Length: 186
Image 1 (cartoon, helix red, strand yellow):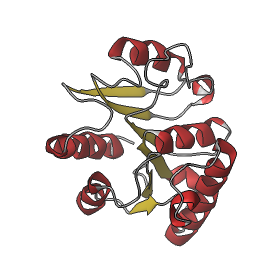
Image 2: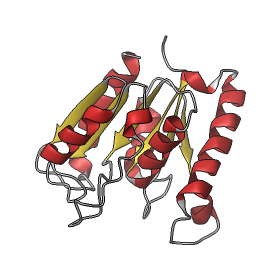
Image 3: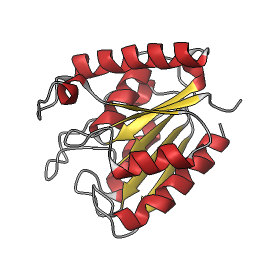
C-alpha cells in the first residue's frame, strides 16, 4: 500500500527549509511535512538531546497522521543526518511506520569509527533507504554496508559518487528520483 505521507526532518545544523526539502516537497506525489525541531524554532543552534528530539518526532507524527486520517504505519519517516537518525531510533523503539528514508546517515562522528551510532539497527524492521555520499566522513561505504546488515527490514543503499556529508545541489534531482522510486515501492 502506498504511503500516505512523508515526514522529513533536518540535520543538526540545518532547518526544515533546506533547499533539498523544498524541492522534494514540490516533486513528490505524497504529502510531505517538513518538520522543524524545537531547538530551531526556539532560535537555538545546538540540538537537544535524543529523548527530546525523539519526543518531538512522536508529536509531529501524531499530528501529521491525524491530519491525513491515517495511522502512523502509513507514514514514511526520515531526514538528513541527525534527523534521519532520530527517526530510525523512534521506529526502533516501536513506532509503526511504512518505511525510513535516511539521507547522509551519521554512522559515527568524523574520525571516530569506534563510536558507532547503530545500537538500534537490529530493532528496525521496516523498509529503509540510505542515500549517502561515498566520501562522507560520517561513514565509508564499507562501514555503512557492514552495519546496515543488522537491520531486519529490507534495505536499499544508494551512493552519491564523489559526494560527502552535504551533497551538492547538482545531486538533488538524483536524490529526489531515488526517494520517489522508494516511496512508490512501499
